Structure formats: C-alpha cells, structure tokens
Image 1 (cartoon, rainbow, N blue to C red):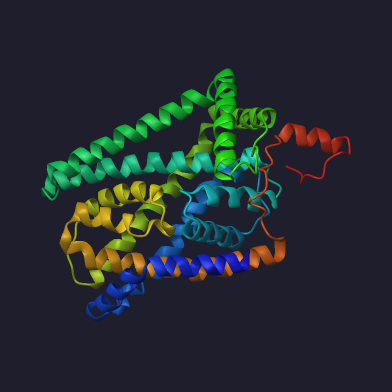
Image 2: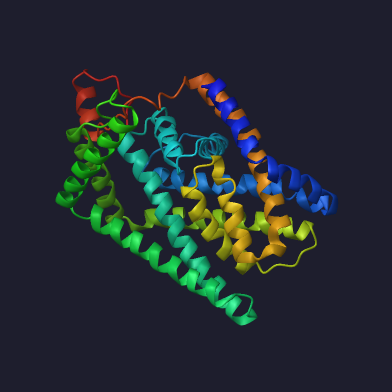
Length: 357
C-alpha cells in the first residue's frame, strides 16, 4: 500500500507538471510572507472538513476518547486519499469507513456521518452563496452567466437535499433503493473485473446496512441539534478553502472579490469531483479561470499547486503512520455492511470478530 501511495503521488505530480512550472514562474512576483499564510489556513480547512464528520459522531456518543490531534491527522489522511485516488471521493469514503472501524464505528454509522458531512457542506454553501450573490449584485462584479450558474447551483443542491431526505425517510423506499443499487453496483463490478468478481455487495447485507442508516436518520429527526455543529464546521471549511485562493491573489497583488471566488470555487469543486485526473487536476483550475476570467490564471494555478503539494506531503506522513500502526486497509475486499444491531447480537453470542460499535 505504501508503494502504491508513492506511485500515485508521482502520478499526481506528473499530471500537475504544467501547473508546477507555471507556479514556479509566478513565485517570482509573489509576496512569500503572505503565501506562508496558506499553510495554517489549509490545515484549518482540512481539520474543519474532518470535524464535519467527527462532530456528528461525538454527538452520537462516539469518539469521545479520541484526541483532537488524532482527528486532525485522520482529516489529513482523508484528504490525501481523496487527492491520490481519482474516484470522486469514493476511495476517501471507503478509507474513512475502515479508519473509523478501527475506532469502533460500524460501517453504517461511519457512512451516515459522511452523508451528514456532505449534506452539511451543501447547506453551508447555500448560505454562503446567497450572501455572495448579494455582494456581487451590489458591487456589480458578476456577469449574468455567473448569476444564472449560481441559481442553478442553489436549485441543484436543494433538490439533492430533499431527494436524500425523501429516500431515507421511508424504510420501504430505502429497501427498494438498496436492492436497486446492489444490482447496479454488482453488475458494474462484474463488467469492470472482466467477469472475475461476481459481486461486491450481498442484497440482504445491503438492505440491513441501509436500515442502519435509516435508524441514524430517525435519531437525527428527534435530535436536530446533531446537525448544528457539522453545519458550523462546514461553514469554517468552505470559508478557509476560499481564503486559500484569496491569499494567493493577495500575494500576487491582484485585487479580487472574495464573493466571486466563492462562486467559482463551488463550480470548480463540482466539476473536479467528476474529473478522472488525480485531485481533479486540470478541471478544477479550468472552471475557476473560466468563471473568474483569464486574469485569474496565475493566482488559481499558484494556489492549487501549493495546496496539492501541501496535501501530498502532510497527508502521506499521517497516512503512512496510520497503516503502519493499524495495518493495511483492504479497500479492494468486499465491504462489510453488517449493521450495528446484528454485530451487537453476534458479539453477545460470542460469534463475532467485529469491533464493538
């Protein structure tokens, strides 16, 4: 796994080679003292993203004995995995399920915590986007295209949130979805493995796994305050992420409206999720430059290169420490979807090797 990670780091740097050259040229015109601000803001950004997950779990009575620095390390590991494995965040989600499993968190609850983090990020972005639209309307810094794009984002995010709530709110609907997604995923895995692997999920396990998520959803409906901290941490995460680009522009002496950067950041993040290059290299920068304008190329590229290098260096160190102490994550093995109640029952009968949830 270490060898694979190193190879993937090299791949990321290879795909970023043009940006690396361009960033090196831009460094001559940048204020290095201002650029140094990128390091603490980046660390706070990744920590806030991780706390979007961990604060929910702590609200459920989990990870109470886990130290803050351990959670910070886990957040850096998550971002490292998401950057070196171009899978739209799936690798990071699988890694975090494995990582949290070592802390006694079952797959269903680990998955639900990440769903909460994604939804909280969407809610936080809508809040910030509405503020940004008001600002650019007052300053007249945005074109009609940017305003229309922002409105589309808001509509799409609201649709996703309502659809997810609609799906999870009904046990029978969730059961039907579990059967459908199991059939689709297993068929896809069967095709991509050239008929060597017949299935990744078992239908019954998938159903019980989603029922575990359903149980967590019912708890959230009764304890709505569980969502407050994830949303607040998501606000911190997005503000810090946008500040990283603002700092790069500041270091280059280029004036820019932070509200416009926020809008471009949201579009770039969405596109970067679907780009197959590691870390979304190329797609992310391209979208930001299209929305902000050609004048922004130097600042966007400079910020992205520094952030990618920072992610690879800091993330790999903690990732290496984690797999050295905990063993290699078997992410290529069938995912254990056994739900919490079944594990507890099996443990009470002395028939399970699962960790306590």
